[in-house]
Image (tube, rainbow over all chains, first blue to last red; front, side, top):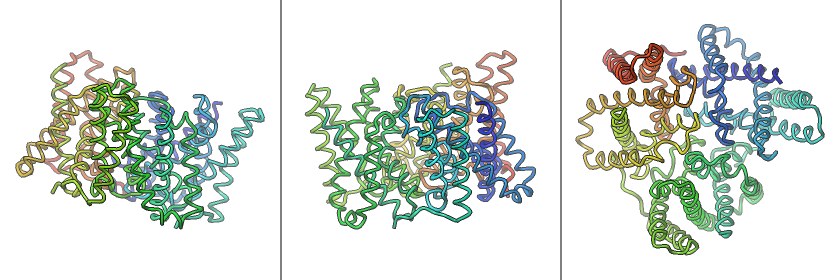
Length: 200
Length: 200
Length: 200
């Protein structure tokens, strides 16, 4: 499923750019911004690999992830002004990113013989924990715990993946349907300004 | 030692409830509260498993932990008002929780041929690091670094475990004595409002 | 290369003292200060071991690290006043520490057949992430993301290590040259008050 791999790299690229943008708001230096870019982009997948026990973690054995993150850092440094104007495009790619990360996370977990419900968790962790680690390193309360519909589409998509998988649908179709669902729910939720109920 | 397993689930349940209560003070949404509940309940054991190298980490292979945490989230959502009135009961169960978590952590570390003094550390980490990770995710300075006698009973209990173990006392007796010691010291310390000396 | 091992213990000692000093500014109690000392001293190497998959992580199998950290905690408690006056000496040893940690991190990564560029990252992580984790546990934005030239000498040193290694220079010479370079760049950068450019 080579196309998933390229979308994974695309998601990594966009997540890294979002990391640089966050770091620039915190007045970090070039090193700090690079760490944030890296953690945002590969943090979720790294945590998933650690929990299921796949060592060394993914990006250590495939230098493409490092190169993609470094490119994102360089490009967002040079084209700083343009990137601020590309928020809508970035948001779209970010949404594609969480869709792809969720699917890859689930697939990897199932490959490790992990039970389906935990595999959905692993997919969601892959998609959202990079952003959580970014916020912790920036000394902020994680955004997705309070404001945005972000993990919910991943969880819904994850269970859709399991159902289709159970029905013996072809893997490419499953991936396409799951990703489309995650992306549509997320776009729709943001457009409608949906949020989850609070505890208080 | 089946009874330890059920107390472990009970401790997980109570820790998850305390996570939801903390999250509700931070105005997190349902997803954020669920993450905090999960991290509080299984964070300590997860860190222990990662450090000693037991993969996949414990709760991934035993769905009961996930079900217990989900139940705690649902129950504390429905019975929010009642739970606020149960603080004393929750505190007692939380204290039982750290006792059990310490013992299980030590036993697991010893099973991995880890030296006894590090095993006591692993027991203490199992008991207290869920709360530390909860506070970090909530962007708070970890409570137990400043105010409460929390880890001290675990450390004392841990060394008691080692001594009794050395004297070839039966494992059930060791667990019972260690847990009772941890629970009594903690209850007594809170009652007497004890605290550790500060650095300043 | 036994002398590297002793410098590693020395670095661990000094990092632990810096952890205690940070904790004392935050009014932590003895337990909190000990956790911070431990995390500062062994956090970077622990993260490196987890990412490359070396379990149990290093300090679990070699009690000397625990003893060195405990000594640092005790000594910095007793000689609190003197240590405040030793800032320059501590700074020098801290700088030796990052030099040694970088080299040991690279060597370990290469031993695990990790690609050279990632090995430089692992060396840098070994040297700087203890301080990052310390700041996160203290609920502070990591210092090295904003103010200091800290990771840059490690990265420069790391690439020097790779080049010399490629030229088949003797390992002892490589270590000596790399450490000297890291230490000089860091001392010079602090003296000249250098900092990296910011994002804003």
